[in-house]
Length: 531
Image (cartoon, rainbow, N blue to C red; front, top):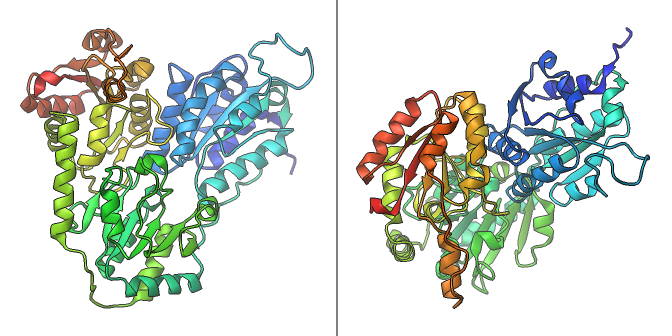
């Protein structure tokens, strides 16, 4: 049967649809318009961002909310450069995002071409797992399969595929059937047996769980119960252990004296967690010198870099913890942990937050009580979020998304838009500070265009509060930390969004209820005058 040849831009859209893509976030331009030629015929929906940075964060939020890869489509040169901050965030937080860009053809004039870069592919490689240029149509299809199988088989990271403009315009054969990813591998059974033996002998087992365990909550909770283990979670791992577990310390790893509690353990299982600087904010987790440490991770690079652990199990977290529970067999836990110790530590850390950021806990409690338990929150780099990711218990994984690793401003609103488009069945909220929200506030236009009932909560204290506090602590006279803010409510209304400024803590819940019932986003401005 003779194949029908069409422009590669058309065939590429079809190939994306066959690989499960439903949505593309992006901005069209003369350099990537050929990709848009085939979107409608392939049944792909396109969300028009107001800036490429917004498109990238939308793809990231969509991926986190749905568990499916997000796709962002941009032009060559400045379009891809604007996308690099979101790609860096997706890299640090292990989010599957496919960035597709056009690129200038090789050859021709050495400079002065529209959107020209010295090394576009190499620039994107700095913030992606790989960045490749398709040589021809067959190579483009192979790179798509490389991307989508990689998302499913390994630690997910963003990738970049660039296509020369003449290649996009030229006729291409039909794409081949999509390759299907294999399930992530399970750890070596022999190592699991040895690890189970260590855990069975422990008097004070401890589990430290990260975002790599987000799909393993059932297995993690069963293992913790079987062991009588105490537990910590990272910001990305919140909700993996149920908040009501009496031996759960919560997401307080960054508290300096969490090291004292970790040092009390005699066997520690670290699963799906890099134990990075942004997990701990100190030099090392604080294991006791005699403690036996077991590492379970899907990423071989993390295991290879770990010289401290006695056992390193390479594989999927859910499979690994299920195998550990099975290897332990039935039995009653003989744990030396006491709930009173855990509760005392948690009370101490809540008091520290209240002293560091007076009044914020009351605002956080009001927000938490007002939101449905299934709500997804996307937060920005702002003081109220720094306090909330420690103090706000998550009942399940995947309900709170914070840009921990790369630490970018402007994340919350566009990421929440991507989530709301991908998961219209759940309430989605954006939480931002008054400075960071101005990085991407133009994406309110996209949310209005889409008719999203999305509350954008803005903490407006008129300053870069965290930087001001850091300068004072370093004995630097605070400089450039107070800014003139716009009238946020008037700005939101100019786009056609709703806007409210609750005048009391009790007024927050009705404002959120109205926002969720609206047919458009609502900016909810909160100020320190609430407390």
